[in-house]
Length: 146
Image (tube, rainbow, N blue to C red; front, top):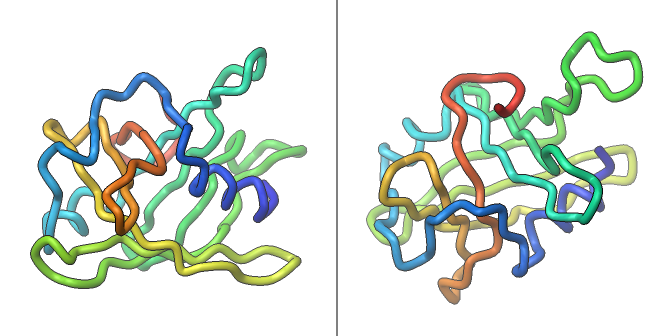
C-alpha cells in the first residue's frame, strides 16, 4: 500500500466502519496500550462504495515494526510488507500511540493518537483535540482481519 493511501486513511476524520468506540469512551493508558496493540492487528474497514474488505490491516509487532498484512505474505501481487514503525509515549491521559510510515517516497509522521475503547475490541484513534480520526477493530494476533 502506498504511503499516501495509508496516511490518508489515518488522517480522514470521516472514516467509520461500524465500530462503536468513540473518543468519549475509556482511554487506554500506560502499559495497557502497549499490551493491547503489541502482537495484534488493527483492522480498518474500507468505506469506499463497492470496494469491500479492509482498507488497512496493520500488524503491530512487538519489536515496534508496523506491517500491512495486505493479502498475505504469499500473495504475488499485494504481499505483506513493513510500512513503518509504532511506539507508545507519555503517561496517564497523555499516553499516545505514534506511527511513522515509510515507503519509496520517504517517511511521514509521526502521527500521534490517544486510543479509546470500552471493550478493547472496538477502538477509536483520536487526535489532540479529542476528535476521532480512525474507528477500528482489534484482531487478536497477527494476520488477516476477519
